[in-house]
Length: 175
Image (cartoon, rainbow, N blue to C red; front, side, top):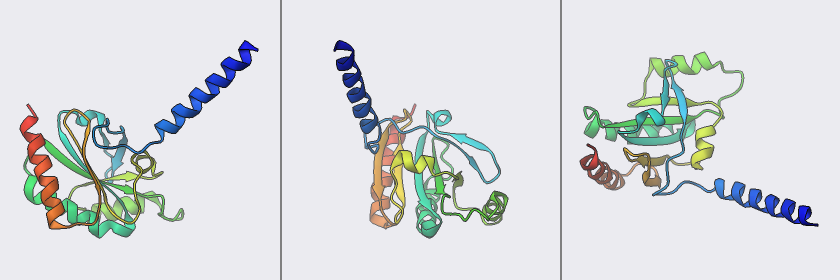
């Protein structure tokens, strides 16, 4: 009898823990870690970026123009600041299976986006961050690895201004 009770309690604990682990990350949470490659097959890892402020633009090929607008605005203001970096993380699950990966890399190298583009072939990062497919998903991560800003929105100058204020405030905290 006691063994059954322990098994049931263990099952309930595992169920609750797995349900809680599936919650979307929010401001104040540790940013989910990831390691991805760019079009030149260089590896980039959020863990290795600790100490920098990181701006993530998560999107897919259907909203690439909107992703690029965010990246262009970022580059205009922060291109030469070594304490902050930005990435577009492309959800490539929608790329047809018959399209070779080398072709996608070639296209990205031929016409590079405004910031480093990371290839999320299986959509694993997008799953971790619970992204929306129809709009860019923006995450600002502090130098300590915490999410400090999150929006799901197309580019608007006033929203970019809000994001820029967060970046500037966080940069003042970086040693």
